[in-house]
Image (tube, rainbow, N blue to C red):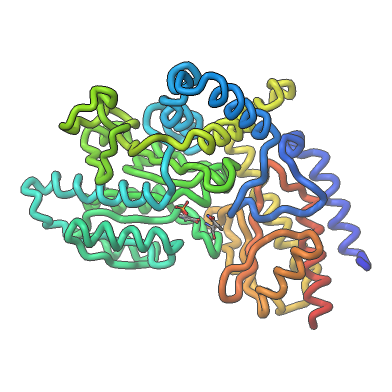
Length: 421
Ligand SMILES: Cc1ncc(COP(=O)(O)O)c(C=O)c1O
Ligand SMILES: Nc1c(O)cccc1C(=O)C[C@H](N)C(=O)O
């Protein structure tokens, strides 16, 4: 039914030209995709083609045949820190500072409590003089819930403020600040370097949630002196549903990282089974219990996409986060251009900033009847998601989303809204 208009022909031709010139275009073949336009990688990344074979090997050989020996011989025991070191370059961290495990929610709790304990240690007496935790008032709810519990447990007050209000809210009462790098709803990218510097200026600790930025844009944790960071691996890192999250603890803070969940796998000598707890050195201090090996090794295989692996390296494509960011911005710019060409005037309003410095890798459009609109889009093979009460969210994963996908998504959106009147 699509009646491509003159601007439509021009946009479709433009998409074709950019796809042909795209240095990342070969990567799409490394994912299991169909004819649908998949713009929900900011919720659940697509399946990397390397994962099913690797998981079958883990199940049949490593578990089925080697059984208990795999903890050593197949490297299961050290998987959390080994895979942490695979994620580290994607978030600008030198090796030895990222450990994989648990959910983002659990890691938020560990990081916020540990940050407050460090603030207590700084003030000497541990008397709770720094009695406030600031939290992003617009955060994905789990971070707010966990920060509230962390505050209650450490005897602090939780103060929700928007990221823009953080500099003015900081002071000598602030112990820790929990922020999102990219807002899950609007797609707004917050100024991590400036906000981290402001938190430090106030003598407090910065905890960043990287769920919506890691794998989509440079984070540069080490360069900006971030204290602690957490993030999930099932969005832009394509680790699979419920794949384990990660925790970054800056190297010089590791000896002071006092986990509120000191499980036995974070012990310096776990197999000594010592009743007295002695924390491991380095990133493994952030571990809790037995790692979830199946999910973790699926994630490890998924990360092959980044280093030209997954196909034996035959394409030899080393993917840089900078090239991913450049394509992400080109895709979201192009989507906004196509939306203004195809969508009836005034029917949607972008709540994602136009400025590149303030944009993550998604476009969020405010739209009447957004829930109904998204159902119709999905029915026509354009998969985004709906966020209550009126937001259409479209996530752009540069590893597999094309410019042709982008043009088609906007065109179908325009047609759908045109039909709905
Ligand atoms: C910013 C942010 N933090 C945390 C989470 C969720 O964490 P968890 O993996 O613990 O469900 C999400 C999405 O689910 C998120 O978008
Ligand atoms: N983690 C999710 C899940 O288990 C089920 C459905 C959605 C999710 C999500 O990741 C939601 C996502 N963080 C968001 O930005 O809305």
